[in-house]
Image (cartoon, rainbow, N blue to C red; front, side, top):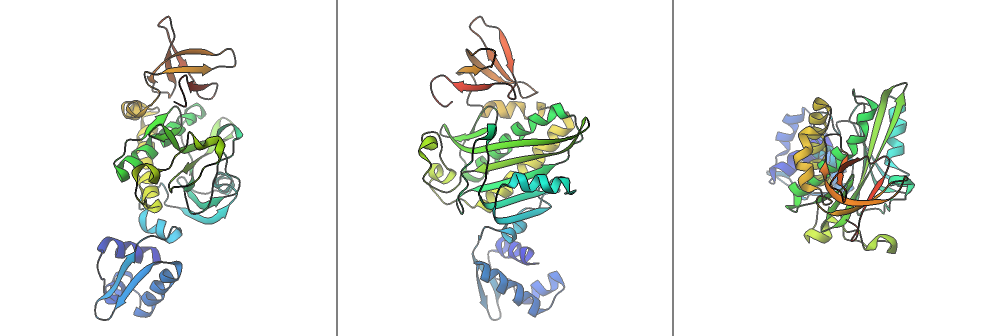
Length: 325
């Protein structure tokens, strides 16, 4: 009930009488008073005025009640788990996947002590500054389609940031979301197979939100949403928008069986497009011009002779010749 009261107070922006809350939830005034008291102890500033009711003054304390009051999607985040500190939200999600957690279960932490990026790299996960979450998926499609989920999530994160801030994020193929050419989001997707079928997929995301000092090795190429937009960003609202965008994007992807529904939008955001890139293929590095992605999420790279090669993210890396992108 706390999350529902919080949502009503936020949506109203004004006083809601205790009687109205009692009628809405079918509880006593004492139960409403107790729930409001618990929200206050969590850090919410709620005014209580006789004959007027309750009014939310300070609207965000990042945590389970905040997220439950915001996320009202059909399945993406409908099952929510929040922890102040954990090793890795991907590890939490994988454990829950083995134990039967539902499709769309969302695992969120305020701090990670063992966050990971692609190729085993560590992901800086300090408390209070950023968004760390993993969503558990139980797809009906084939394993060879699962790698495209990373691109789906990148598209969703970029769309959510654009919706909240009005900024125009870019995507560095396949899974880095950028603002002003610097990374604000990384995505790590992992899959568990059962024979030839997908048991579950976990898609872990870290979004740099608050202004902060980065380690020297990533300082040049990393930034945060607040540093670029110059104002406070609600982490709860941003995560809400990510879930809404991802649910829509995932459903479209699953129905089509590939990235066709997202292809035009993704390519518009692709910062590599029409730029010189170096393909780091184990068989030998080569250079070309990136021409966008195809419906399978492969990067189309045109070589010096004009021939176009499809590059698969699981096999090679791509680097900008003149810098990060």
